[in-house]
Length: 428
Picture 1: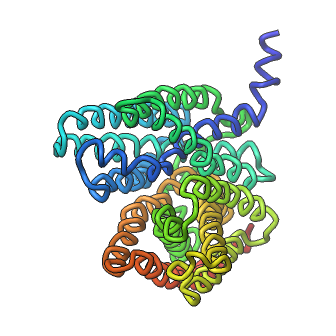
Picture 2: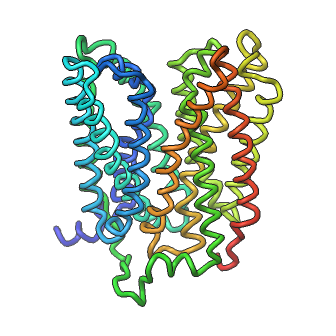
Picture 3: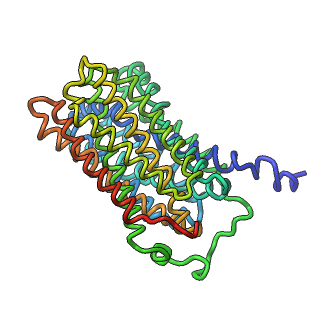
């Protein structure tokens, strides 16, 4: 009876061995995007400005990209090791952040506390983010060969949906855990997310019929894989991925404050935007399965982003939107479109890479490509903050409006790259 079970049932069910564990991993690590929910509270509690604390998030995204790039081969060889590393590092980073926030409550403005937060939330949790994000992707594409986009989109949608799920829970905890709610929340969530991710780690498994290449003839080096197509092709994919994330972060990081300028709810609308983020991941990736050239999805994302951004730029929607329903609606449409395109860019990149370069080294190649996310994490929200501080000194809405001029230009560059550098793969 045991031998029968080993050959069938839940042990070979693609939902149990790929989709569910991917969701458990991604719905946990995706809570990194809840940062704006509690960042100001952290700063107030430990005696630092919001801008000083903000670097913890930037470092988390940077080390997400870097760990994915440098640990891609580990994921390629052993998803169980990589998913365990992800579970431990993510939970340890959250718990460590809680400890330093607790310590900072009685040691106001301590540089030791700030560095500890950078190390725990930025470095340690960032490694958990990168390995956790990467671990289930190839496995999903192997189990769902005919619907790779839908499968990866479903999991990556979990990363986007995590913000919508966790934000109201975090708000409740911050309002009901009493004194020191901010550090208590981190410790409680560290335990909870470790359990979820560890279950995902135990369930995650590649199909039995997949033979992982081991020797050099079957599995060439990553540069050899990239060179199977014109090098500009990969450079184009990396750059348009980077620009899409940078533009997305520039707007998403300021979303809460833009909504304040318009007099809209800073609780309800971020949840709605998170739904669009998750919906873009699932919808755009599923649509990619129907396209002859998956790069078409990126062209659509950039065109929609350019049109909606241009509409708000021309009408000065952020500056003039308060009290004007039409202009407010334009800004809301822009925020939702950018969130959807931001998410769609993530969910389509592994399948775009697999269409162009095959499956043999997809985890390592996807990991290197995620380095674009790391660099965008350093440039996106920090560039937006610089622009707002420079142009919004007298009227903060003018600062947010100025951000759109930069994102509009960058989206235009990304669109050109998608047409000129990333050519259709005729061998697909």
